[in-house]
Amino acid sequence: MAFRKSIRSRRGRKKIHKDFELQLTSMMDILVIILVFLLKSYSTSTNSFSSVPGIKLPISKSQEMPPDSLHLIVTPEAIMFETQRVVEFVQTADALNGGQPTYAFKTEDIDEGGMRITRLYDALNSAREKAEALRAKSPARDANGNPLPFDGILAIQADKRVKYDTLRKVMYTAGAAQFRVFRLLAMKQEQ
Image (cartoon, rainbow, N blue to C red; front, side, top):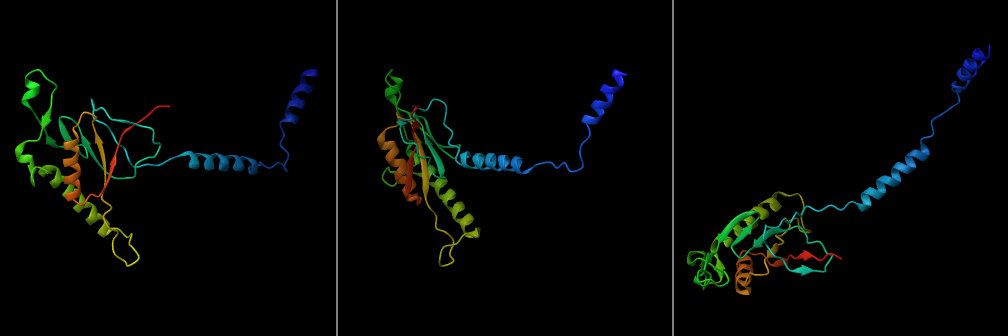
């Protein structure tokens, strides 16, 4: 008989009253708070500046993220634009004699008095024309209804071992291709 009472009492406890309702208000509040937190802490950036193996970048303390731009990498051996090798340097005779390896431009890669790098200029010019064509098709317009102008921002990653003269020629070439703003990228210093 005691056995039957315990079964009946368990059955009675499992009954759900008809006036019971699931309380979703507090659960929805928690989910909204989590969603707001995730949206606030999530940072979006389309930039993915990858580096080339063996490149030595300068160190920076700046916490600022660079804006969206085209990417140029200058190593002691070559110049790469948007992951494509554009210019290869030649090794000078000093390195062949056991000294530090130094690299120079090929004579056919330089024009305008030795300042403009021809293959880099062609690559930058075609990228600018492509960007202008995309802006012409874009629905974004200025106050007069014209397409937005080309912003001309170029992110440059230059190895610490690259000579200033080489970097000056790269910036002169980019300026000739109507790139006016240069962002020199560096490694973020760990704190």
